Image (cartoon, rainbow, N blue to C red; front, side, top):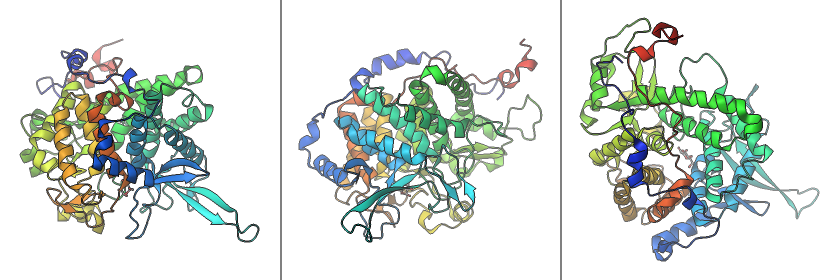
Length: 522
Ligand code: GLC
C-alpha cells in the first residue's frame, strides 16, 4: 500500500484510555469458584435451557466429560451424539460462569489423553499434535467373559471418519483457549502447569509453528477444517482459523511455563507480531480500503509492489460495493495470491475482537457494520454464519454442489443461534452491550418455541433449517452464556484478552514493506 493511500494506523489512538471509560470487565472479577445464583434463575426459558444442557452431558467412568452436540436423534444420530470440541466451548463457559468446574477440567484432561492416540487415514499417519474434532462414548458388553460388566470407551475422530476426511484445525486452538479460560475462571494454575497439559500444548503448537514453504505468517488450511466442516470454498487462509490461531498463541504465552518453554514463547511472540501485521493490513476491509483495491494496478513486480497479492480489481464481486457502509468494516474471509474472498464470516470477526487481533478502531468498525447491516447479518434470527450466500454458480464450484449447503442454508448463509455468545462477548468488550441485548431479544422470540434449533435458513433467517437438529446444545449453551455475560459483564474476563502492549501498532506504508536491507537499516 502506498503512503498516499489509506494508512492503517493506531499509533495516534490510545486504546487503553478509550477502553478505560468503558471497561466493564476485569480479570479478577472473573474468578467464580463457587456456584453462583443469577437473577435469571426464575426465568422459565433460562431454566429450560439449563435443564436441556444438563441432559446433554456425557459421562465416562462416572465423570461428566462433555456435552453431546444435539439431543435430537429423530433424523438419525450421524455424529450429533458426539462431543464436539468446538461445540463444547459455550457449554464449558456456561459451566465456568456458574462455578461448576469439574466438567471442564475432565473434558480438558480426557481430550488431552485422546490426543495421544495413534491416528491415521489409510496408510497415512496423522500428526501427533492434532486434537480430535469430536469424541463419542461407547459402552460394549463383554459377553463371553463377563455378561454383567461392560467396557466403557471414548472414541475420538481426528478426521478419519468425518465427511470429507478433514481434520478440525480449530480443535487444538479451542482447547488451548479453554484451558486459558479455565485458568482465568478459577485463578488456579495447577491444571495448566501439569506436565501433560504443557506437553499437549507444545504438541499443538509444533504442528502449526513448523517451518514449511510459507511466505506468510498465516496458517494454510484445507476446506472444511473449522466450524464450516464441509466444503465451502474457504481453503487457503480462512479468517476463522487465523483468528483462533492468533488467540491460541496469545493464550499459550500466558500458559506455558518459562523454564523449559522460553524459546517456544519467543518463537510465538515473533509469529504474533508478523501475524498481527498481516491480518490487520491485508484482511481488513472498509470503505476506504475497498476503494484502494478497486484502483489497484496489477502485475507489479519487486519489493515496491502495492498490490502484493496481485488481486485483479475486476474480481471484486458487485455485492461488496452495495454491502460496504461508509461507517464500518470487517476482516474478509480469505486472502491468498490473486484471491480475496470478500465474504463476511461472523466467528472470525468476533474472535478477532475478543483476542484483540482487531485494534480498538477495527473492533468498533466491526460492530458498526453489524448495526448498519442488521437486516442482512442478524435478520430475524441471530446470526448469519457467512454473508452473502454463494450464488448457484459459486455453490456448484465452491461446495461441489453440496445439497446441505444450498443458497441461504446451513453454512452457506444460514443463521446460527449458537454463535450468539460470541457476538455478545464482542459487544461487551467494545462497550456496546445494547447491540447484544437486541439480538438476544430476537432469539428469545423463537428459540425455545422452535425447540432450540441448530440453524435457520433464508435471506432473513426466518425458516427452520432444512436439516436442522432440534435441541442443539450449542444453541442452548450459547443462549445461556449470552444471558450470563449480559447480566455479569465481568465474566468476560474469562474469555477476552486485553490488547498486547508488546505488539507494535500497524502502520503500512510502501517503505515498511521493503526488507530491512532495502530500507538502509543496519
Ligand atoms: C455441524 C457443524 C459443526 C458442528 C457439528 C456438531 O457439522 O457444521 O460446526 O460442530 O455440526 O454440532
